[in-house]
Image (cartoon, rainbow over all chains, first blue to last red; front, top):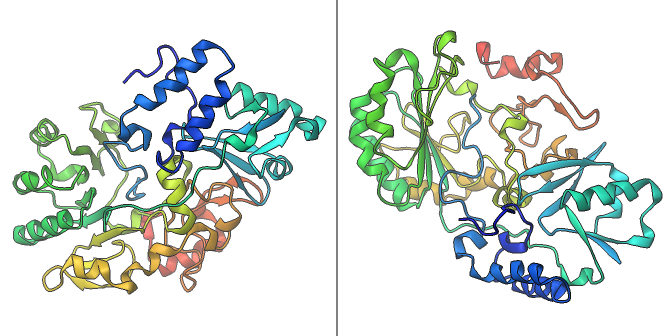
Length: 70
Length: 343
């Protein structure tokens, strides 16, 4: 999913556990509320991410090696 | 004005240097210990940044490791708590000789434990027809992915493996080991890796290298209080014995007589799950300790369960990697484990 055209790797607090970190997202929005409109748009898009993405869960493959044979 | 590190950029202090682990983007940056201390709270007042570190901070902003803000209190640290819904996350099965009914039983039980990943190891005797028979069990239930290690000499035609990789989304990779050197690295299919490494026994496992680092949130948080290799892992060795890992010695039962579910719930089985890197000698001073996957099967001191992994060549004091197998201080342990040509 292309979240932000031209800037796939932008930094947001999305990969944290969403429930615990909702205050972070809201504060992020406050932080940028006085800045450019473009930044505001980016922040607001966070709310529309699917849950699995906000949780940082990879849908395929383990996130660490199961063994170290090679 | 304050400089604030992004919450997913975690500082890990080591003996001689520290790291910023960017667990969102999967990168590690080295920083001096003195700077790590200054940033230990995650932010620092601009006025208090020593001149010698001003360039570092600017570089952090450029590399998107942090940002300037008037309100650092709006950006709390992420929780480092870890938990997972599955009773067993991953399993290693040494496969060569198990009867079909045992394999079916094992996979059914792993599914009921909500096991997500399985590694099938064939050291010497891979039978494609038999493996195709168990594929339906792997494509339903909890299993998200599996990997197979197969010896080159037991494959007739490598392309015949297409009957596995063409129809199975859960297949992550087939590693063909012990292949002739000229076939090493051949590109047959994106899911097939060919190596000339001879993997004919469990003794080849446990290698610690940056190639195995896992720089991500699940591993970083799990590693705070758990063992990154053995936590929620179960293994079945060549004889059907149920263990933490094929290379560990303690046996908790046998698939012929014991249920995996019952074994997985035994407190003694879970003991190694809770040995974190912070408890392991040498590793506790290593700046990579929360992104490195541990090994408790082969230890520098086989009599000390908190000993450094034998197959790690990194020295956090000198910050240098060396070949572990030629280190004279490890020769006794190599002999103890009878590693032979697996070094």
